[in-house]
Length: 166
Image (cartoon, rainbow, N blue to C red):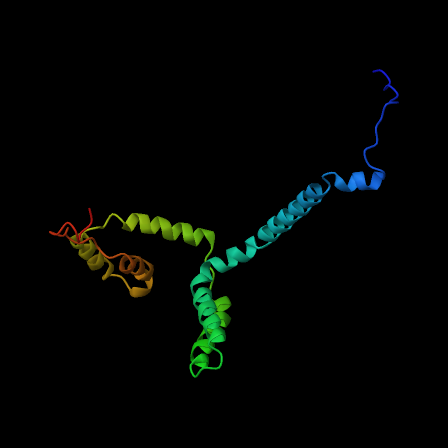
């Protein structure tokens, strides 16, 4: 490495060095630093809310309904029906934490059971399965019956192509 040559022919375009520094691109560096900090804060906030999202997963329906009714009741404040909308919304919001949460193993077992029951597609197969389930008490077969009632059996294809499934 060699030493830097001494510059004798340096030309000063402005009178003050401070004006030269202000004219350089210092703003974008500040902007990028601010943008980076905002991104970091946003990501840390999102990561810290993940346990809350896991807790809300089983209770999202009453929370959604409660939030919608509460917001509607607050917006309609002063009308005759504001309490008829606000109070059920608040009750749903307050009752949502009292609902039992499902564990990962319960969800996996339930989805495996849904996949196994998806084989019974026709109404004849469904009737045979329901006849078999009728031989057992309701508290034993409640989950199976809930899954079966949630998904109706396939019907015969429609004669009208415009109204049926393709």
